[in-house]
Structure formats: C-alpha cells, structure tokens
Length: 121
Ligand SMILES: [Zn+2]
Image (cartoon, rainbow, N blue to C red; front, side, top):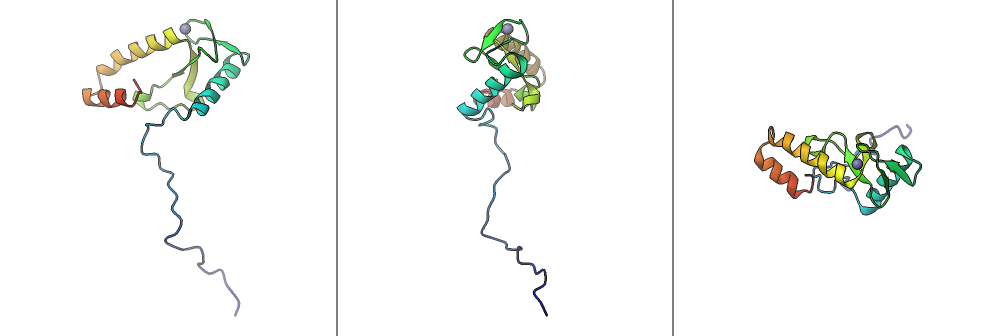
C-alpha cells in the first residue's frame, strides 16, 4: 500500500481568487497603463517620439496623443492594442461627437447617462 494520487488539492476554502471583471470603471487602467499605451502607439504608428494622427495626419507626441478606440467603449470596445489608434485632441473629440450622435439613435438614454458617468462618453 503506497500513497496514491489522493485528492489532496481539493480544498474548498482558503484561497479566494477574484479575477472576474464586473466593472469597467477602471477600464482605462492606471496612469502608468495609459502612458504605456500611448508610448506603444507612438512606437507602433510612428518613430516612438511622434506619430501621425489617424484622421488628419498631424503629428502627435506623448503630450498630445489621444487614444482612440476603433470599436468605442459604448459598444463594448476595450483598450486592447488591437482596438486603439492614435488621434490628436481635436480629431478625437470630433470622433466622439459623431459617435454620440450615432449612439443616441439606438441606446436608451439611461444607458447613455451611465456611460457618461463612467467617463466613457
Ligand atoms: Zn487629427
């Protein structure tokens, strides 16, 4: 009789790991996350110091770049690298306005208010 592969790992309590993200209030991440994302955009779309705005091609820097989500947050888009592109401030705001007009037509007002509170619009 030897020690077989017993069920030693099956313990019900003790370790609690919370990995489910049930809130998007911290969607954009920390300041360091956002700076890293901008630096990545500058490197991916430019020379690491400047890169052209996706819309008007005006060069942006780490100080002026805005992170534009291709699929907007209101429609479920995240800040994953496949979903972001560089934008200058004016173009980013313009894109936001066009988006809001489009969204208003199809999203209940209460949802829009919630999105605004979360800073997603
Ligand atoms: Zn622009």
